[in-house]
Image (cartoon, rainbow, N blue to C red; front, top):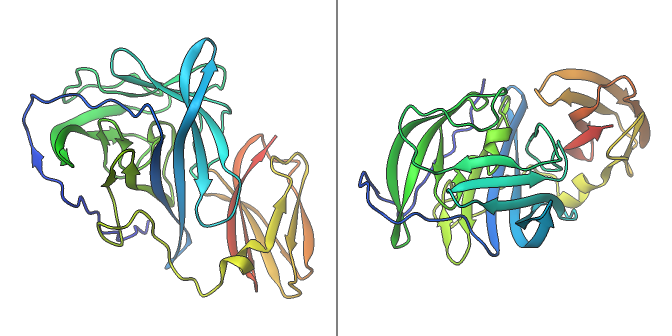
Length: 306
């Protein structure tokens, strides 16, 4: 499996192992997590997508107060997606109430239910070797190390985490969450990986910045403009029986490929007309990826099969 050689910078951070410091809670106002999605479907070829989680506004879900969380694709002009509510309990437990089992984000995130809140993180009296009661039955999440990190003018506890669904080390930082994915306890990696580039509340903290400490975004020039890529349209989403692919203005050969959430190729179709249809009626309900390669570009999207 190929790995993206990103330089992981903790710019301006220093580490110590002091046990006495103030706990830093999760944000209660406007906050942003800027992220990078790296995915590879072919040898020697990888793709990068910038996306963002935004916490803004309040909501009441089953009698409890939450902060609304949205996702935003920073590479394409798509509407923000409402994901659900996040709150911090009295015991340093962070909860998330999803609006759907499969969240409409770039990351493949699956919750066991969308009818109740899920424990997303806990920072209560953690110790090395502790197994955390998060996403139990689907993965084992263990604390394998504890230190502290200086962010701005305050120290925050940082926990090294071993997650059975993540194939590389991750760290949880008080008040921020995972350095890989905000929802990492309910996501997994295959031929893809995620990076939290930076976190912004009142100040901006750089977590993983491939372009250096001043970067919250990262992109690669593919030689094809975004406007051309955006001309490849997919609908409907969610889909029931058929997905229509419209490679506007293209009269050349194109190929459409459907992958499972685990990265397995399920079906493909070649076509030489601007528009074609894919039969998805035999797919089981769930989350899938659809990739189209044409003279207009190479676009990957996630879709849900009802």
